Length: 465
Ligand code: AMP
Ligand code: MG
Image (spheres, rainbow, N blue to C red):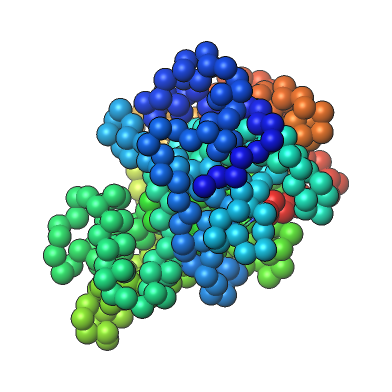
């Protein structure tokens, strides 16, 4: 059960999401503020809620550990009007049997960070868990400093992780593993034919979702930061917004997290890590793939070996869209690689480079232009001239594929600081409004699109636990 907090106060509430879930937003906006805050703090449970903390395991930075919801409690599931089923979970509601030495609590800054970045991801069209509300608890949490406490309400297609299967495998009872598998398959892949090949088809479906997800992350410059197997969802949603951040200057080796010393979860390493995590999933479900272990390994390997190709295909399709290309030509991958190499050598801002290509005339001289970039643009224009579709369609594809606005690190920090130190939610609300409309190229908000100055110190993130 959630542990009641002293003085809950609603900080932010997601009306659009409430509506989508089939909840009546008015019932929240019209209700007594204290009632609503009590609900999202876990002080008062919704009718028919059956709180539980889930067990899971996971490889954290490559090392196996038994974990569980140490600071999260699932309240229950909500059937939305579109028929989809959603987990409603409180993050930071107090200690659970899996809290180990932790307090089961969360701080306001990191919860608002999760809220705004998950909203941005959703608006970018990237599968993600979402945030329904954040309440301040009125209680302090003790980290390196004393911070204001908060509870976030997370909405997810499910909270089944790779680590959930690792846990079931570690229990060592095939029936447990099988029942988890049946549940997951019914929930996320109901279209799969039951039978002996179902587990392999499921593994392939999970891998396919990850290949697609990772391609999307790389397409917007997203660095998750802590891709441990317990932070990878079977649903294919982005989950666990801790030390994540978006690239400014394009750098394949970029790491923001202060604890990722080896660069394990660096920007361009993410697809490889996804494959590594899928290998842990495959190991966990091996007994379901085939009664013969050698055959099971062979089947799993087929899926895993196909992953880099599938990722690359999704990625290339995404990059083609970013460059306004619908047709496929063999030289396209080289064209993209040449652009990225040029961007890396110039430390070019990832988002703004693609934004400029979308809205500027590529044939003219640009501010700060280089010979190399200009000649790349000519090469690209020549390639585009061979597109069979109308130019306007190609242009529209670029507008829909290249965000003008991402949650810029400096703007995120500024908004969180105002909210947590001064109780001023205006910068947070403004940032939310901007990142909820990432493809609005007509909007001119230089403060929200500006790249940091080259002298700015490297942005650092923390797990926020
Ligand atoms: P993360 O790296 O944020 O996904 O967290 C890893 C594990 O640590 C999860 O099992 C969390 O439930 C647990 N954890 C993180 N913060 C806390 C906390 N404040 N109290 C208890 N458990 C926590
Ligand atoms: Mg986690």
